[in-house]
Figure 1 (cartoon, helix red, strand yellow):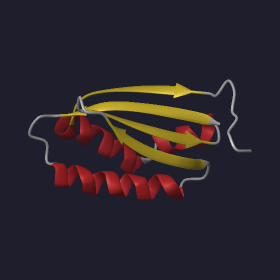
Figure 2 (cartoon, helix red, strand yellow):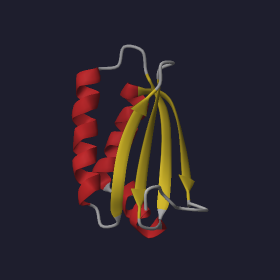
Figure 3 (cartoon, rainbow, N blue to C red):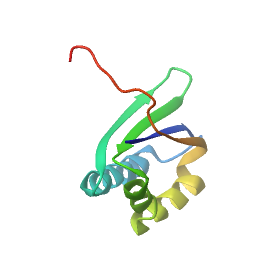
Length: 100
């Protein structure tokens, strides 16, 4: 499994409605990609947003990263929506849960 940690801040004056439409489309596309496992969003009081995305492996993540529509929205996000972001691609060292 591969976990992507996407941390971001929204640009002042960004069009939230347009950003939500783009985000909904990306969610629709991502969930249909082979190897997609899950996606969750969180927000902090200081204005930071965190998304956790899981794919089965690096190859399926690469296919998502290089999807033409995803690439276009990434560019739009840099120009219109995000003031900053940080992406970390991680592999779990341990994976367990309670209850089993």
